[in-house]
Image (cartoon, rainbow over all chains, first blue to last red; front, top):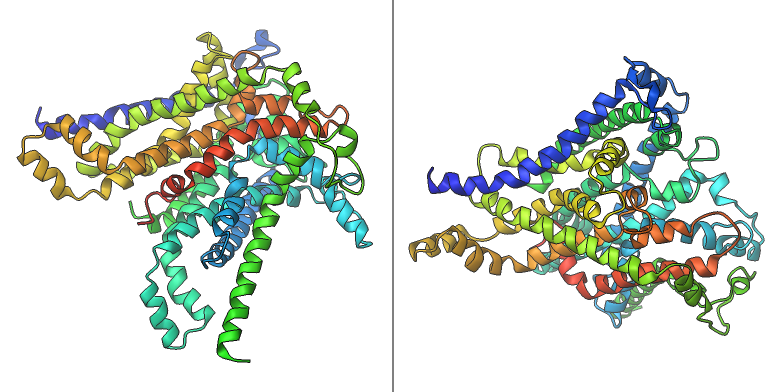
Length: 287
Length: 276
């Protein structure tokens, strides 16, 4: 074995371990998805053919759940990227107390998802005691019961509050490395804000934007805690995403078979999204 | 109006809007901390109370109901433990991939990231059954292992991009001087990418600290982390906002303070080394 081969063998542990981490649960999930297997009734175990899939795929809530998942991912990414860009540009100016403002802006990113959800649910969105209700009544506007009137939007709001700081954090740093001479040159040439933004800032940030979109897509496709704690997927299925549907239709019934069929479905969806993202976005990340 | 004063107004407007955003984003956290010092009655008062006599009652009650320190300790051990484990696995691999890339290195890295696309809910059943069979349910060990795998792909990406930035010539010079692989890693690669390694570690700690799905589903009393503690307060019985705020403040304070102190490093980590 040459030295190069020896060094290459260093890659083995991470690849093998991640492969096992992926393949063992994955194959067990696929296996269970074809089995009749309920943790509550272990004696009824046996092959199930495609019945688990049939049960899951014919669930009338499934189309809603898939659409909700996509709306969720799409909206949170759009909001956080647009708002993140705006705030990162604002905070680029030097002013007194900028350090404090910066720390305040990124703090929500460190908040636990469960805490985030509880905080918004109780102290802001509660129709009686919540701050939103207080603001509405102060201005004589109708009080909105956020979690039942606008459930999906409420979840989007919570997630955007948490993840816009993530976008700010990344764009902020990226902006620091922008070539200031170029900006000055553009200003002398008479470039306005939009011209500078369109032809200097945006191209400079393209890689960071790709990173933000990619990481957020990974996290938001499997949003669970925020929905679990606040709307529990409701009312009806208005805020149920795929992850939550599997949880409520199968795991709550201890039906490992159907849960696994749902899991396989979720994995396929995630990979379709991943495929398109990697195709379009990951190029900017230049490995 | 002169050019100068127009510019000044523009500057002030920018600063003003930056502060407005900062206050808006921080307000929920401020409100949570403030509520934790209120009585339950004050917590639900309409209009909301800004000035009141603070009480420590909630914190005492939370501590009485559940031992905060044991949950905090579990969070610290699992998030740091998982991060160290993941770094030990990732550093040699990333080093090897960055300096001796093969035809498939890029594909392998993308595949690694794609393992993060496996929805946790899809593989909960098998993991639960395996953990049960190994007698690891409600143990810190199982969380350390899961968090390590969960963060391994992201850590690999970060380290790879940092190592990539080290000029090859430095390594070659080292080799001329008779460095073996180990020396090379220890005396050249690690010191040069120290910032990157810490930031990868910090991000991994934050993600593990806030992880909720696995810690809620796989642990109970013994290995419960702070996320599980908070979730145990989320039951709908009654209005216990002040206590809930207290427990949330306790659960988030360590990581927020940690985040504030390390934000500079963290930023490097988050951008995949994209920002030079």
